Image 1 (cartoon, rainbow, N blue to C red):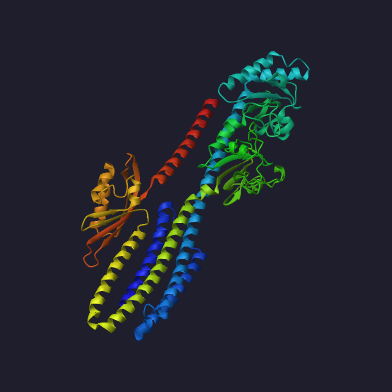
Image 2 (spheres, rainbow, N blue to C red; image 1 turned 45 degrees about the horizontal axis):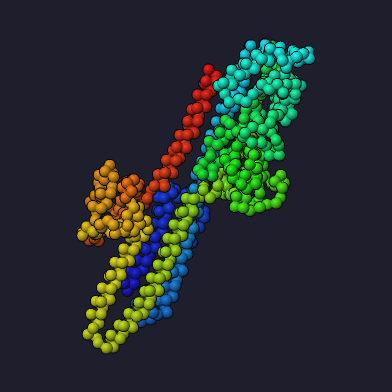
Length: 627
């Protein structure tokens, strides 16, 4: 009876330890914690408590019955088999439920973190874009208010009204010189002075004079706002000149261009004309968008009310390979943000014309002027599942979205899911195998004991001692296996504190570049590999745990790889003590290679630093231009 109690206690402790270890591993690897209790969690806890209560009641009745009629409750009896089957069923339900809850919590936490990251990137990009837009507007207003520029503009307008030769006047030369002097300090592509009837009376290009201005043709509402006294951003539109080396708009033979347009006022404050400064949308405007990309698949881009790209896509080479762009085309005004319904990157095809496809979930909401996010996943314009955040900026008159492929966003969750599922499978497999093995061994032991009792009674005590010895050896092996599971299945080390012999498994050796038998099994092996700056602190924490009757320790240090570089290591250990004297018997632990986590943290830090440098450069440029 006592052995049965010990066995049941051991199994319960084993399962609990495995579950707690799986949750601890996921939490340590991912840096996530549990969320606030929910109704679903409460229902789960109540259900599991009920199942546990039923099992304990059944076990109690089984123990009472086995006490009164022990012959019917041997390992091979039908009652024992039913108990073992019930135990494994309850174990499967318990561990599966806890694993599902842990994974759901990890998934929700990771999604929340990604949502906040995307929103931060989105708002930072919009803030940068508004700062840049304000700088360009101020620059345009300063040029328009320049007395020399104003006088030449008035004379040029008078020549136009009088049908004079405004195309070759000295006023035009003076205006061009003023603009040229300003262009030395900017990336502007040109300018127009536009009459109230929409014609160009001044430009860097003689061929544009006297013709209708592109803003008047494509964005008359924005030009009208300029004549109302407002300086506005004109989103990209088809140029009136031939294409440049950056590529053409799909379906056109011209490149995209964007403008800032504002009023030219006379001394009385009356708007007499409009001044527009031309910009390349693939230059500063697209650079601000591209700075907002996250990881390997993140992308931040701008678009208009029709769902057309206004900035350069990060994936232009990919868009060419899947047929959304030709080699001589670029993405601005060429790519429609529409849902193809299939993953074009994977080679899938949708024969529906692109313009007949629905807008993506993001574009459908944003073009209605809505701000939002989606972390459950939707298909982007390539058909790739992404998560994203978006906002329509009414001041600039454009939408901005920041998206990240689901596959990259949920990498940490997929890793945690794999770890938890593997632990779950191992736990259940070991439990079932242990139960079957125990029943088989028990049956054989009962038969052997019965035969021995029938043949020689005087060998009962000897046989009993042999069985007890075998059980102790089995328990010692099981104890070592449980401890290994509690310390996870990474690089494993087992220090016999009394003999000072240390066992290092193959994975432990691989982390520092050695074969399994290449280094001696001593504590000195570890001490020689630890970085000189870390050894004192690591030894101090270890000694504090051993001398302070602690149950374990968790320390970080660097170890020298066989090739010469340093590997960041997280060491977690469990201290095994004698039950009575509390003296240390063994220390079992694991080594976890933290290289990827350190590199990810460094990459995030560098990305943040790059964004901050971009802000500083923009602010400096603003001071230079307005100073």
